[in-house]
Image (tube, rainbow, N blue to C red; front, side):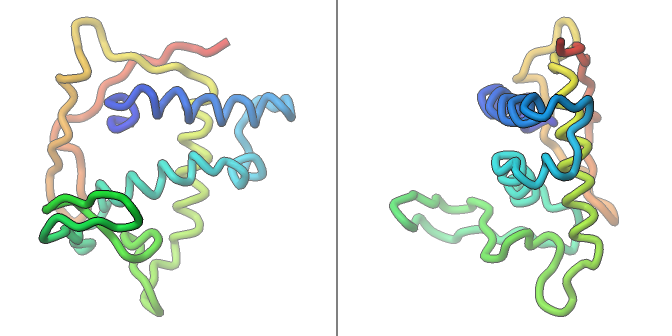
Length: 153
């Protein structure tokens, strides 16, 4: 949610995708069958995991020098990963909870963005949002995110 608040264009695009998909079937909830077709939501999930791996053991991979891949510039110290959803591990030691976590993330975030618009508390600005993380067994935000939900009609 912090990344979405820092990137309002992405938030609006994601909400538009969710609301247009749910509106077509006129349901009160974003159900699993709807989530399967939300490509932008899945991309947001993958990008979030790339930027903020949930486990300390998921060591981020950083580029060492400036390179160009497929016409895109990758600058030094940019977080990169070679495998899809690397924070869940890969190969035969892949996390068995990957499927349920993906479905849960899509269901929860989809419903939060479908039913509510989000704003910062009075007097707070986007620049005030902290992205600092605290290391432990899992990675947490150092300063918790506080948002105000506004019911979407």
